[in-house]
Amino acid sequence: RPRGVTLELLSADGVVIFSRDYELKDEADPQAFDVGAREAATVRIAVRSVYLASTPSAPVAITEIDFFGRLAAPSPAAP
Image 1 (tube, rainbow, N blue to C red):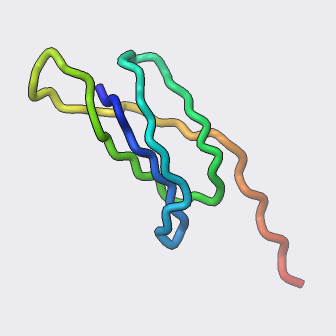
Image 2: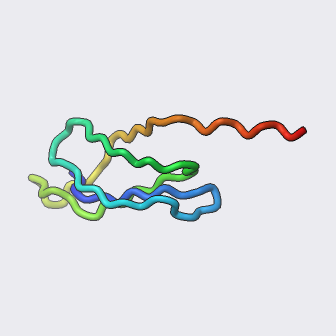
C-alpha cells in the first residue's frame, strides 16, 4: 500500500496551484483530506513511499480517488 504521497493540483495552463505531502494509514478504509484549492484542471499524485508488503516486488496501487466540492459559478454573459 502507498504510504507517503504528494498531491499537486494544476491550473489549466499547467501551473501548480496546490502541493502537499500526505501520509496514508496502512488500512483499506477510506481516508479523507481537505484540499481547499480552487480552479484546478489537473490532479497529479506521486507515491513517495510504501508500506512493507508480504511480497517484496508487489506492485503499488491506488484503487479509487474521489473529489468533492462546489463547481465554480459560470461567468456572467458579456452584454
